[in-house]
Length: 285
Image (cartoon, rainbow, N blue to C red; front, side, top):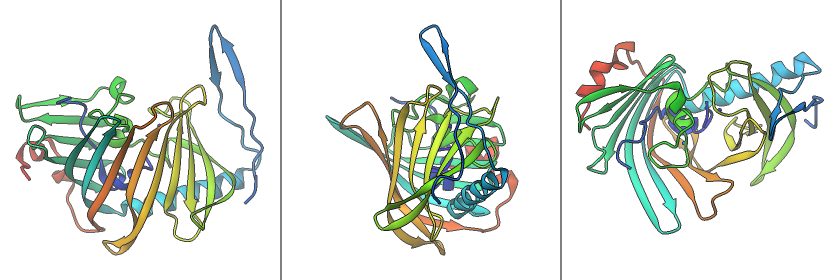
């Protein structure tokens, strides 16, 4: 469910609000209560209960700081997405802009068949500009769980970017090390009626610089669907970033989607009117 909000977010959390397919995604401080309820052949996993509210506040603050580390007050990102399959690889280039958590715009600059396509998020509303048919198409909530342009990111991960801070409750689980980096391990549970895809998200957040190092995404049955890993930490735009993010589906061997950041800037002045349907049509490259 904001994330790949943090996901990418991170990165295109920095800014990827994107397109629906056009041409062809510390030790244990809290006791968990897992309530499974049989419903025919299905099982519904209910939200865990938080024992100590101060622990929840601490976990939420860690997630908030990580989210702010990735996006800033505003952001601009130049990135490449590589969709890798056992028999082929497809790449897309894009530029993206964000302001806060509610305004995002993404322009696809390559390949030629997708060039000029634009996605816009403005609060809870989302649209795609499809230059081939010169139409603006509103993205319905029912499309959020669909694959984004054949990648392993969902439309929710890259377009809606459900707020990992606002739409979820948080529990600090433990500490773990990733490549020598001590990390908080935090479970985020979707709030009732939150407009999100993922029922639970588990995050590994660096205790040193609040970078997201790993994210796992779970469905409503608490089954692992995707895992996001981050690497190639660099300073870019005046802050540290994980410039490579890889989304790996749990049940599709040999399949992954890479997101590589080449350029980034943060905390610059940008007006709300930039994030408009008029701007979607005007952007070229």
